[in-house]
Image: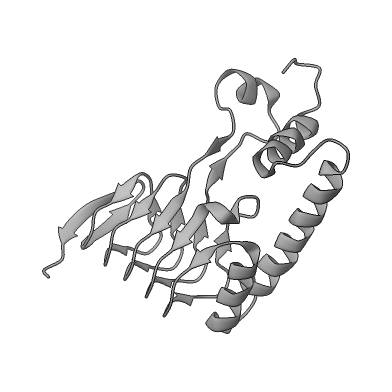
Length: 177
């Protein structure tokens, strides 16, 4: 990467490499993939019906188990939905955000010298409850039957059967089995 290289081209090249697209038709494949993902995400995002939202997210590549609930206005990573796994009986409240990547998309200096694109899968284990307005960052694992309190930011892992709160979220209580 040199400083004269266009940041958009760099970002596009990274995405093409991730998805294994070649040089000839790769840009077209990538744009079609993103357009499809964006349409399906938009349908899920604005849907008041959790079953429809889940169907649209699954069609994007998000792995979602049985008996889940996804509220309206939930944003699941647009570029890497395949890195998000939501197990059975998980509830995700409205206005929550789940990211599986971090990328300083507009600053070549930061991207080149300090913060390259980071991809890290997110796993939300069975029975977890994500309250409204939460943010889940790349590499986070929400433990089985854990609770993330309203407006919290999950960074790293939340153990099984715990209540976490704050920014960054910290465990405040262990739930009795």
